[in-house]
Length: 63
Picture 1 (cartoon, rainbow, N blue to C red):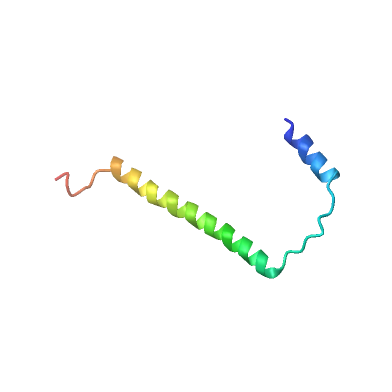
Picture 2: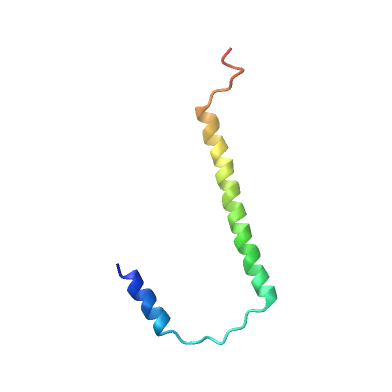
């Protein structure tokens, strides 16, 4: 409920920071974001197959 009000005040009463982000820093930030999502994807994939193998029986062992 208060989030839109807080965001409004942050936008209206913000001051310029006069910061400079060079291309090297930008590429580091982008590669960190890509690495984060790749790590999350690997984590989900790894544990998805572990949990899936618990519930699905092997077809060869059932005969």
